[in-house]
Image (cartoon, rainbow, N blue to C red; front, side):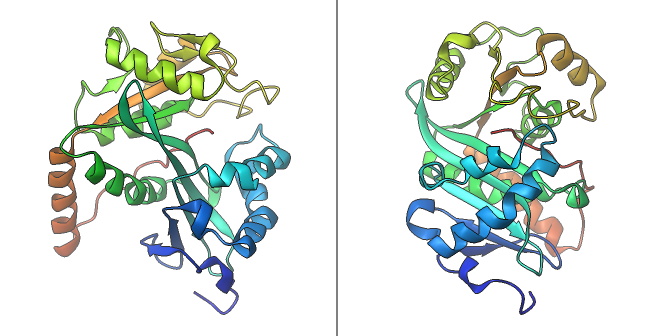
Length: 277
């Protein structure tokens, strides 16, 4: 950090790992921990970064997302700042109960183009997910999000370590409990009437922008997933993605990650995912 880093950002926040030269800050109770000066700093600097991650959005779109009302609804927020205190990446979540189950709602995530491709998004998502998985144990935690991004789909489905813990999936029926989770999530978004429970597709999910979130939909590392998304989604459509995390498996994976870090081994960087709001 340099002397240019605004001290008001540190009040009420916990530092999290974000990589060399960057500062990751975590707020676990945004309503009480994110100070007014910090909010003002974000409103002055964040929108110009967000529109570079989501190219079809406007700064006004993100100014609305940063309103006190919207911020106070967040249960968790991680923002990564450069040495001058400018945001370069973020993830945000809400605690929800969907389908009678405790759920982690992935509200939004993005990374400035200059910092994409190094796994930054997955690193800071873990900071939010870890505490939620512990709270849910011994039951599985269902992570839920609305997305039209195949890269996001691939990243979250891979994170479970199980091929049968992601819905929807090509050629697979949606279990009843997942349909109930998705229906409640769509209702929470005010889009219950647009959800097809058989496919978990929400039609016109991003109707507050003319062409959706991107001028061109992002692609992933899997051609089959890219083609599947193109076949089921229009430019403004999205799916309700539901992913189940098993606490025991996550604990084992986390232990392995720490061992690799201790031994000086590095995971191969993956493309950074971006989760729409």
